[in-house]
Length: 226
Image (tube, rainbow, N blue to C red; front, side, top):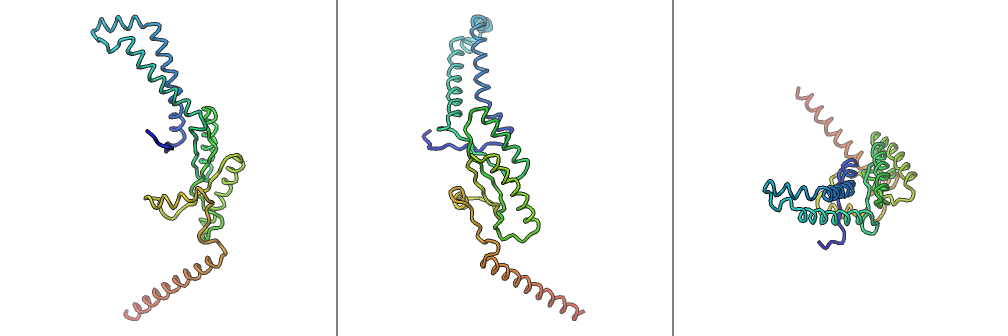
């Protein structure tokens, strides 16, 4: 069908590598079948007549089907290896296992002669974000170590960092909003130390103080009644 771009959202690394191996594996299998046909074609025809299988195992029909399938597989292989037609975008998160799996994937793609020059690092907590949680601050430090390693290992790749969001990216509008980060670097809505961030922190503290005072009043009234 006439599409400008077809996107395959592939499975985790191990399954994806087996999928990418499939055309080459199938092509080799078909070549072996052709070889067997050339050796034992006459025997197959005799067997099909003997058991009354008719044209189901007819040599010419089988040969035509195998050659047709082989042509399709060869075309898929050529498209996979043509960087003008196919490229692989690696998506990962800034953690050790994901870094390891990405390195494995990039090496295997090179063996398959499949173009790969883009890496997306997802779920990044940016250092400039207004983060107060000790847990999140620790995650920022941990993630930055692996982000640096990605840049060191893939300095000739196009690397895009996408933010960890407080909500799921569901629906057309959410996808459109999120897709903007592919074209322009992510910028935190509230940067740590900015006037806006300090004003929001003050507002949050005021709200927390009001809630605590209300809770204290309820406790005092409860004691008086008792």
